[in-house]
Image 1 (cartoon, rainbow, N blue to C red):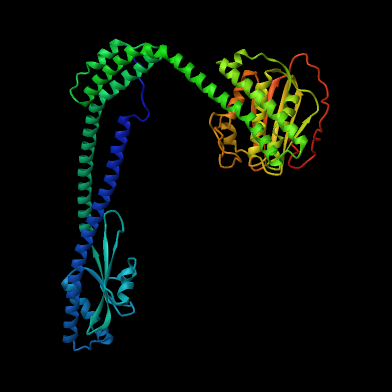
Image 2: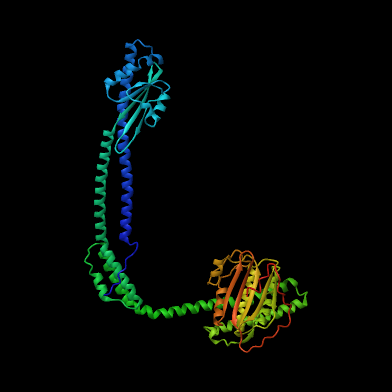
Length: 525
């Protein structure tokens, strides 16, 4: 059995590895941040406890010195014993400190502490709050500046500012932090590789099943199934869910192999039946719709007129008779032929005559919406085709122009011969079509906006049938539109060979406009 190995860029293994890696990295960052924050908080709490004890002891010694020196409990008394405070605090410890007045000015001390550090602690002490600042001069060094107001009997006498080197404590915290990081990284790496190993072991049968299923697809495209491959698939050796999936897949493929030939034999017959049924329905509904519309329109006019206008009555009867006769012929053809395009005989016809006939037939319907149908043909447009089929195309285009056009506007029909081809266009003003709608307008059952149409009940098959008719005549149909302005549907067919080009007589052609909204009607062809 041949296998075409394929590596997926984002296969299951890579996806799971990336997911676990992302989870581990995110967890590692969160854990490291939590550990760092917790250790830093512990260090700050330890320093706070030590400084609180130092603050209490300092105040006790200052009170005792004020009593022993018979000094007043005010700023002046505090200034008098500043040197004594320095001597007493030196015996308590070797920390660097300074004795300051209430304005932060240096009075005495064993170091010029006020000029060091960020000074945030001193600023808070000047406002009456004891505070400390943690600084990191270099490496693992750490220096704490602690400023405390000397408050006795609710009076602030001055400020004591300490400078304490806590590098040893800070180094110990950093060492503990590194040890935790190393341990965590080791555990994470071990867990990650163990998971990757088990994932790889779990997915090996899935990869095998994927390769075999890919080979099945290739065999089915060649209308065959490799039974040796099925045997290998069934003998997967697993006794879990994946093994059961493999065996079930093998049974399924054996059933496909037994039915595949029958499916191939039925395929063409089913497609043929569906195509014939759909075509019959489309042609029947759309070819019967137009004569019925004309008959109904003239019948309504004659009913409203009540026979007072003899000319209208005669014209209506003539049109009703002609359309009913044509509809009767179409029904007979539908009953007699399964695909009438095979039996219809093509002959030379003039699209100008068909266009004017269509304009006259739909004139009543256009007047109902205060619209006019104007034809502008300067020459004959001879083509080789079936007149009734081409008439159906033009009726559909003009009917759509009426339904979707702007009221109190004109529908223009014109055409030219150019380079051996005949071009005919139907143009109206209205809502227009977007580029996306222009691409989909000829698809079966597609409707742009059924609520915008003046008439309901359209199935969306008219333009798709028009395209089919043009394909029968080796022609094309297309659309150009400017949203909110105009829409042009055009057809192009091979001009009938050997036909004489003669000016079209009769009618009132519309002159080519020099500007305005209709200026590009002819140029669009």
